[in-house]
Length: 166
Ligand code: FES
Ligand code: FES
Image (cartoon, rainbow, N blue to C red):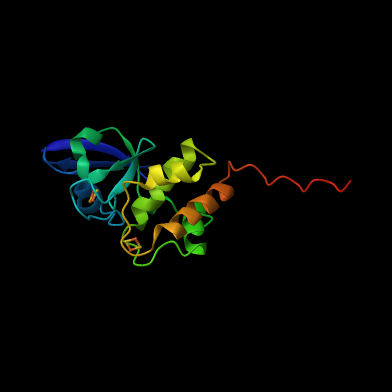
């Protein structure tokens, strides 16, 4: 067994795992946060996406021991004291999910995108969510939600005032 230290959603955690333990299983079963979903386990669907030191990572493609010392954000870490995160609220308002299976990964991928590209164009949105499969909602509403979230992030520029009449 290997001792692995993680900071998960701001809390220090220590777990003992076998060398072959996948990060997604460690998060779900050893840390006890089951909002991270297991889909394909082959790195294709993105349901298991979490943020590792701020970067979106498919946690079925990483060994838990490789994440030793990392800061991890899971879907449980998105909602703050003020309620839903702006990205969660935008997906809700734009009807950008149905069954919700893909949602944790989709939201965390969107958070990473908006962190590095606060005002993404459509091509950048498509590129970012390329590895997150949704089988039931349709990507038009998901793209709309990402654009909406971009306007609501704390870093978003305030809307320009209308030009004065001349
Ligand atoms: S479960 Fe990890 S990418 Fe599908
Ligand atoms: S909402 Fe069902 S898979 Fe995306």
